[in-house]
Amino acid sequence: MTLETVLVVAAALFSVGLYGAISQQVVVMVMMGLELMLNGVILAAAAFWWFLSPSPDGQVLLLVVITAMTVEMAMGFAVATLLHRARQSDMTDMATDLAR
Image (cartoon, rainbow, N blue to C red):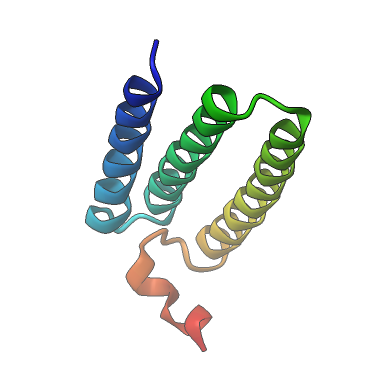
């Protein structure tokens, strides 16, 4: 496995996530698209760390990013659950008041 192969897979993950985030209107599906995009970025960062500079600094940075991403997604799913319970809808068009 080469750096180029891993970067192609990371780009594919990012592309699929971008398509999912743009094309979907359900909040959970948009968040899943964002999750795929972030996983593509993390995979690319891990590949650069592994192939270019395999020091422990890269591992710590990746763990911090993964932890922050997990907390962000948990908060997002909590907001989506609250929206669904309050309005019985999970479409992004129904959550426009969150942008204010």
